[in-house]
Structures are given as C-alpha cells and as structure tokens.
Length: 361
Image (cartoon, rainbow, N blue to C red; front, side):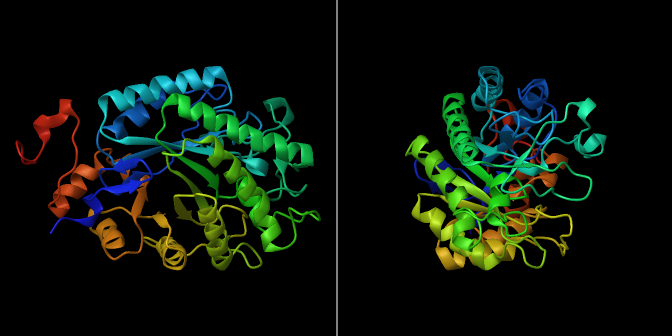
C-alpha cells in the first residue's frame, strides 16, 4: 500500500506531489529586506528533495514590519528582483513547488537577530517605532509600540496586498499569511495584546475583524487558481489568552473567505507562555480544526521521522506535515522518509544517479 504521505494533494490549481512541507524558517541574513546568495543556497537545497512544497521564511510587507534589520522583505523593487532570482533558480533546477509566507512583526519587531541575542535594538543601533493594536510591549524591557490608527490599519492592509502582488510576479505558487507566533495579526486576535475599545477590540468577533479584513483583501489580489492559506497559533498557552475554540471559529470565517488551508502552530504571543513540548505537540490542534471545519490543515511541531509523519497523515489528523529542524539537519528528508516507508518521491535530474532504483545506500 502506498504511503499516504507520498500521495498527491491538490489545492485549487496547485497539485503537490507529496504532503511534506518545508516550514518557513527565518534566516536573518538579508540586507534591507533583500535576498542574497545565502537564500539561494538555503532554499535551493530544499528545492532538490526536502518536500513537495517549500515555504519561504516570514517575508515582511514593510521595513517597519520586520523582526530584525536582517529579515527578508518584499516591499521594494530591489526585494522583488533579488527574491525572483532565487525562486527562478529553485524552480528551474528543483522538484518542489514554492510558497511564500507574508508577515508583519508588529510589537515583536526592532530586535537583534537570535545569533546576537534577540534583545530590542537601542536607539543608537537603529531601533524603529513598532506597531501593535495597543501600546502594550511584548514583555519587560521591550519597546512600547505605537497603537495603530485607523489610517494605519488601512496602510498595513495595503502593504500586505502590494507584497502579495509582488509575490505573484516573483512566481510563487502558494501564499500564506502569518497570523501566529505573536506577530501583528496574531496580536489583534488575542485579548492579551488587543485591548482596543473600537470595533477591532473587545469581543472575540471584533478581535478577529482586522485579520479577516487583511486576508480578504489579499485573497482578492491573489490569483483565483492559486491557493492562499494562513498560519495561526491555536493557543497562546497563557490563561486568558487566545483559545483553540476561538481558533475553530476563526478558521471557519477564513474558510468562508476562500482560505484553502490552515497551518496550525501555537504560542509566541506572550513570554509567560507555558508550552508542554513533546513530539507532535501541535498535532491535536490541527486535528481539531480539520475535524470541526473540514479545512485542509498542516500539522507542525517536533515532527522528525517519516513514520511519525505518515501516522499523522494516514490517520486523518492532518492533510500535510510542515517540517523545519529535521530538514535543516537533512535537506533530503523526503528521500529518506520515502525509503523508510517504501514509497517513491521525486529527484532532480542531476541527482537521478542516487535514486534507490540505481543505487542502494
């Protein structure tokens, strides 16, 4: 019997050869938001056989929306040209389809990259004023963000739309909005970070309003034959925060607006979070969304082996698995998983000599 993990899945006009997804992984290697040789190497290696779909790292819709000064962006002609060079290479030589994750860091921006400590930038280090639903910092010692005005809401929404249009020109075949990990759109969802007193704050429905408006605008600008999905944190892991039950309601609203899949993660909004880590710890949240909405879902979180991934997909808990650290460790993860499961997966032409049919490792 064919492993379900290595069967095709179709989302709108896009058919993926298997259900293995290379998850977005921030690289903190850009200059002024532009991609470079690091991205050519990083994404190029995954294009050769890490999964059926590769999604870029969080790609920011404005300079103010970046996490750090070294984060990837898609808000200028230079950003667009540099990223197109990378994606053209990957699509010419690789076997994977390519998606982009569009993001705005909100109050979690203006910080050092992780290799430099992840602390907020000082004024003399080029700090900028971050944006958030309210003037509430992420945590002690963090910048106090500016509360987004009505004009600012319209501006940020348009920035998402313009970046989506650039992504189409670059050649991406799938889009994903980042509404998780404590970034701007997630900040609107959670009552811990959203204490507005207008129609964008207060009730759960009001807190969902702006992320839904942004998704609706981006979906309208995105080609109808290309899938568009959302990464969402299903819980804040903090008492009084965003809940799995609200996530299901939000997922249904997104589905009504033409959302094609949900990439279900957790946490990232509040440093007080208490996460119970274990292999596949986010899978139950993806399973709940799939069960209660009928949406296609990606499961993430400490998924490392082909057998584990196959169990998640074949048991119906999720339609796809998104993997990060395991493919950083082994850029040909899907090859290994296919051998483990007795399945077939695509090899780039230049690598056919190491296909199991002609060479047994």
